[in-house]
Image 1 (cartoon, rainbow, N blue to C red):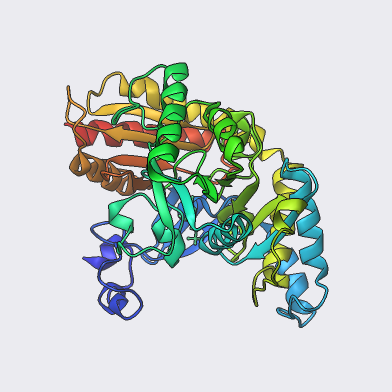
Image 2: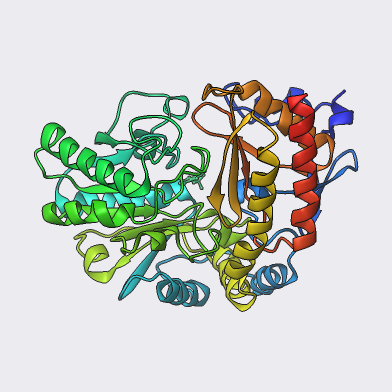
Length: 435
Ligand code: PMP
């Protein structure tokens, strides 16, 4: 049975050794991916899949990218895969300069970490230290990582295993356009209501000495839910009255994925005080970080350090990845190819009342499934579509607060032909699941 699913026969049984039972594994018959090339991966049973999830938006360029492999091999051949941030590391300095340049933040500085969790942890440490307050604002339906503080600002019950929290958190409404208090408002009214919500939360739940607001421009794990463009600008006006810092978690939305902009925050017409990144910049190598204005980051009167953050291997990969993204204008590709996928999905959705919404931007698109004629989430039908896609050779993601969103975050190198190929599979899979 497992061999048919593409996993080594005993690997699922042995999997309990590396992960606790609460960690979900994708698919009724889990797959073991053993190789990849371009936008395709092959499992242990020899089945090849078109990959529209890219290891949760992490394989941003796809698989077996010569430029990245060669950059890492060059670094490995020096014999130095690690030194220490106590010494100068050329790859790290070069990448920091490049990221500062593309960050959109004036006079920016970069602090490197190994993951998105650590990036958010570092940003929270900066904001709470500078503001001398452990009170933060976070958004319902958010996901920010697995550290003690990052779980505390994650607004999903299923990802927040503990009610203990090192931070005092006050919650803002998410940008969900289907459910909740801000649903079905037009864009201007939505922003007005969200700003009102922020003022009310500040007045009723805080003494005003709040450190920061952390928000994802598009909520990744939350099912690619996003508020109308311009929301951050409305919120920031209020934040500025109090001196509250804005942190944009760009772990999923960065590097041109949204097509229209290089960073998700840029759709909002304001610049955050701190921006966090991870995932795609390493294209598989562990690399994350925080970018912020020098006057913000340097306001910390303490030394911070990470043994592996910004190590020569990861930053060699990061330099190659960022050069590739810029040289090939993958942001424009995300917009062009993403539009084919989004328009095709919207057209198909018209025939399928199980689809409540096709949303997202660029190559970050989700389809939300409901019981026809209602807004009742249908996780079962979502799982059916998900399995039908796999049976037809397409990997996608699942997510959303109710597990009823199908998520597409393919490599930004996706071609038009591949977009059409995946789209056809998605349309067939939706029809099969609806039948
Ligand atoms: N922020 C966002 C928006 C994320 O999607 C994730 C990971 N899914 C994280 C932070 C945490 O990143 P990591 O898993 O690298 O710690």
